Image (tube, rainbow, N blue to C red; front, side, top):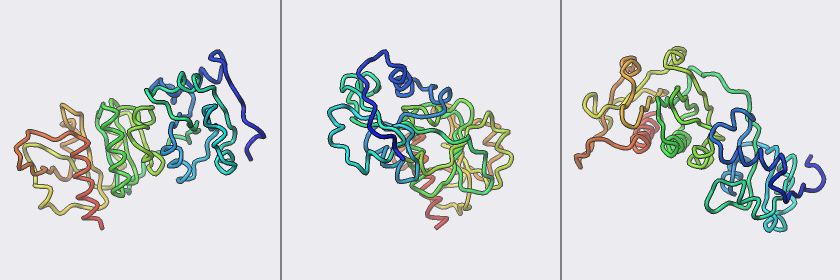
Length: 258
């Protein structure tokens, strides 16, 4: 049950405020604190819909009177920050009037038998978040990030994921050798070789490997793939953005698996 009454804070020197600012703005703070900052109504509702209960719900002072009894009981504790202080904590140009702090569960291990997306040094947070959204939309239950990939729970990836995090099994591994337990076939894309995606018989479940924005999938990892596939590009562009390619490939797999 939620503690009685919110905690009102109006000082930047408050220790909790400093912790919240680190969570909101420091890409690595979530590892140190074991929790994440989720800002805005959409992300907060997405977490609740997937059964996550926030350790803290944080509201701006001007927004607090609009918070209903049902909403205020969602969190273990409610904190109300002066509006200027909420803006100070948030890393956004237009801060949202509400946010959650979520305790992260123990890091999950690799499941060998489920539809998976493997990220091989995908560095742009926006790309990683977009790929997570596609994975969740097209029935992929697990996303594995290899070393060199943007941190899955960093603030920028969380915002770009738009709630996809809360329906996925997110695994971070040191290197490609840790993929050995995967029992589903690995699929990779190539701009220059392989079977055309729209003509291929795709296995399901499978593991799509998506590589670095400039270098693609590491050669050693590509060599382990069961299939290399090409996306038809009638317009003649040399290559697609990795997030766009991911959406096309994962959608094709979803159709094949359905």
